[in-house]
Image (cartoon, rainbow, N blue to C red; front, side, top):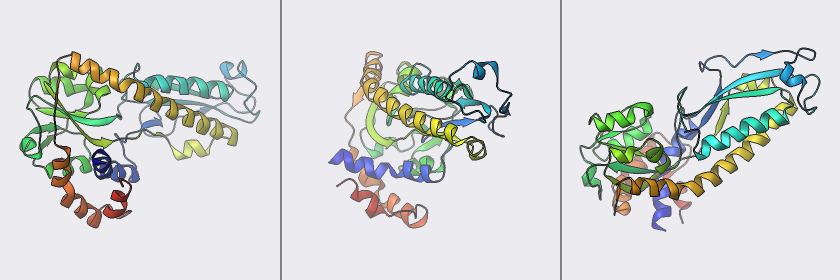
Length: 295
């Protein structure tokens, strides 16, 4: 029950981010053009498909255009999300008859997001809220993250994920937070001694696509994307669950030590802050409604 209450309360950060169309966390793979500006262009029409499309399955309707799309993710290509996205790309190409071709850019090549239950890693041993006061903590550049940790007295710093290892190594940041997958794949166990299982954010992953691009597709193409996305996300969840313990073991084997953190103390320390946020910013719901889901 304690962990469920913490999850519901601290999930407020995800709720707020998700309802405003979060850009990085929340998580969230993004199907966009390579530059993240205009939608990826289309090529061909009823009689002008690429050779790949012409030679592929007959699933595509004769009037379907051919779309070439870039899909970027910060996940490692060999992590649960990366593996599932590879399958998504293959499924879409096959089921669309080669009319939707997606180029996957993993490992943060073009930017973007992360996923997993988020924990706190630091060289300092953190057991209670008082232990994070003044701690220079690397956070994603989102207001809801910064404000929440600031309420605990943290001194936040924003560092790109690709530069996180070096930032921790050189003390630009003293601590970081994220999932075991992030800590393992980035080898943060080499530069952080302790890990406190705060479970402070439960993130979601979504596949986002430019509305104009999506609307320009045929009904059958949109259905292919919808079906493959649903299948991909379920597969990614399955892989994430299976791999979480492996990532955790890698971190512990790498030298990190689990700290017995007082989650209840963190929850109590943030209660007034969250109530204020619901009154002033998160007015799509109420504090009591969100907390009711933990009962």
